[in-house]
Image 1 (tube, protein in one colour):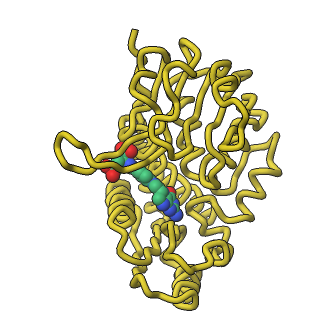
Image 2: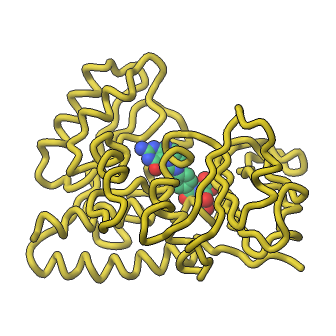
Image 3: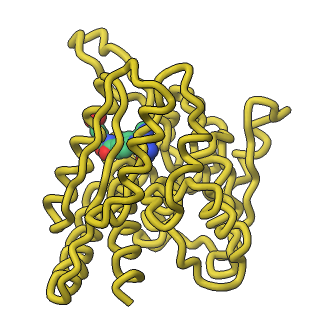
Amino acid sequence: MTAQKLDGKATAAAIKAELTTRVAALAARGVVPGLGTLLVGDDPASHSYVAGKHRDCAEVGIASIREELPADATQADIEAAVRRLNDDPACTGYIVQLPLPRGIDTNRVLELVDPDKDADGLHPTNLGRLVLRVNEEVTSPLPCTPAGIVELLERHGVPLEGADVVVVGRGVTVGRSIGLLLTRRAVNATVTLTHTGTADLAEHTRNADVVIAAAGVPGVVTADIVKPGAVVVDVGVSREIDPQTGKGRIVGDVHPGVWEVASWVSPNPGGVGPMTRAMLLANVVATAERHAG
Ligand SMILES: Nc1nc(=O)c2c([nH]1)NC[C@@H]1CN(c3ccc(C(=O)N[C@@H](CCC(=O)O)C(=O)O)cc3)C=[N+]21
């Protein structure tokens, strides 16, 4: 038995098609959503992610606004760029591409972002809104990767009501925030957050209906620690050189052997990554719709 694929690429394409319709409806009312990106330095991976985001925007009819700063930009330079994006009426939502160069106070930069333009859903105000809205619909921007994971599971019919979900990894962008989405009354999953201080990881994962692997440790989730028939989501993005081809490749947190045990697995690439990008667009469109009234 081989697991079925949680197809992030196809699901993201479907979401983008839906967003294209919503963007066209906004355009008919004279509203054009604009996504801004602030990119500092010359990390090739960051450049490639940002380029992907602008390609996505072009696809659905969202305008692009780019701010680029050199690797030696100061805290003040970066904060000035954030203020420009806050003040630019053409920019309805934007992201500060992470990581910022060493020596920059990232939290200070992120707190300067206008919460109503926070396309990443990572501003403390929006994370706080998510904490506070247990029972009602969340109308503020959601963190993109967690929102993308929930959307990926729901669109494949994975039952979450009453499910035992184990999250591996306590990073801010995924591990620490995804439980806030999964434990809302509308979803009703039970969530365990594991991390490097967890005494016995396998004891938790072996009982899980859903494992979300977001540790950034290649292959940490192996077949022997997954319950037969469980659903496994691979969030980790590590890069290594393929010894066969000598080229770089992405390695996830899920060991390939898991496909023989699980019922559903998200491939990596082609799983969570494209969903993250789709949810970024969804945040920008939803914000523009709210502003349009
Ligand atoms: N402010 C901020 N917001 C982010 O959302 C953010 C960030 N900073 N910094 C870096 C991480 C990483 N991230 C990814 C997005 C898409 C793919 C993606 O689409 N990946 C493709 C493969 C792309 C490739 O081959 O390189 C896939 O999984 O199929 C991956 C990773 C967003 N991040």
